[in-house]
Image (cartoon, rainbow, N blue to C red; front, top):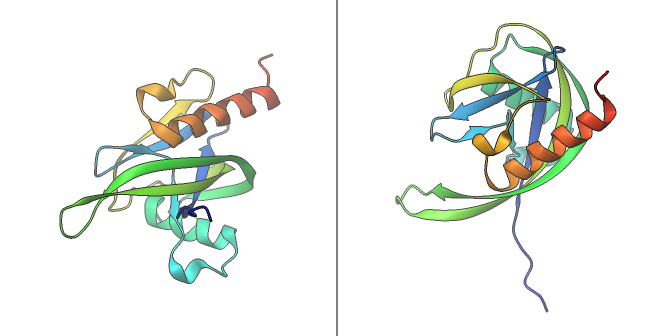
Length: 152
């Protein structure tokens, strides 16, 4: 019998500003990220839009308004997480990336993030910011969005 792998599940949001940009954030560990995060134990039966609403509030503040679209990209990412003992342990994350439209409201980064940037869907070079599965996911997102919205 093959060994089964253990994954955490995350919901990520590609928040677009309507001007051809999307939001990326830098966490307190120095890594660039996409808003959203892993499901908690009590999220098991919660609808994904509710989980996303909680994560958006935690990471971008209560004032941010958005219209959530459909899932667009699926990502697998591995990173090391520091345990309370100080040891590092690999974590595998399966993430669903949703497209969303920013409708307004002030963005106030939560305690886990220290920086944000609106980056161009067209010209952004994700390899300058991301690695692993997040890099592949952002590249795939750009490819899909460019195919849906070709330059005029």
